[in-house]
Image 1: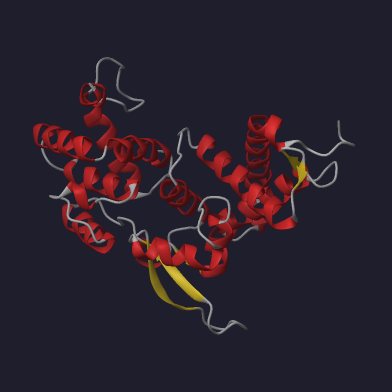
Image 2 (image 1 turned 30 degrees about the horizontal axis):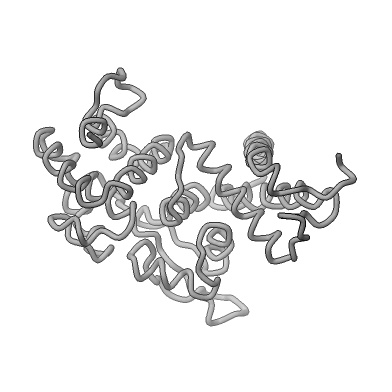
Length: 281
């Protein structure tokens, strides 16, 4: 009931559903009133408003409890971020479990493409998004994403009271071509011809996107090699591709369609035995 503390342990799945509903409702309300919301702030506004709703859901009966223990304020904030991250991936129609792919999906959905088609965001905004996704301490989490080539340091924000606050750019393809994807993989610090260098589902997805621009038989052989080297990362990369399908006007959505079409797992393709199924045997 509303007067009792929320028991996270027994109601986790229900809370994810409630967070998904809150996210959907905020999106619907803002889309109707979008005249008053600058387009570059739309995604961030949806996130912040949905985050506030999820916090309210969690604390409606006082401080939520987990395994009989009340959560402290930091744990409540982290839980709200975690539930909202799951809501975003659920709305995207994907089942993501790896921190990198959840974070990548969130950044793609929350921040707009700016100059040169790239997403630039402040460290504080990115830390908020990563709060319920990454196990690392907050001050180190962005360094970890940079080390794996998911983010790249971009500079310092202008006209800010905190002069040292950094901005970062998401490492993503901005065009549908092999040169661009090769450059993205280079920024990830991986070698597409050496699947053992892949450390993230984001690396795997961009390598598969590169090969999706080649003939189907070339892609099939490459996919088999990558799958044998990194089966769990490949499975997650495919889920991430599904999550990116609905990003209208984004070149990565087109690339995701190409990958899923080659694998036979695209929603547009009739389901039968697929390349993905074959590789799992």
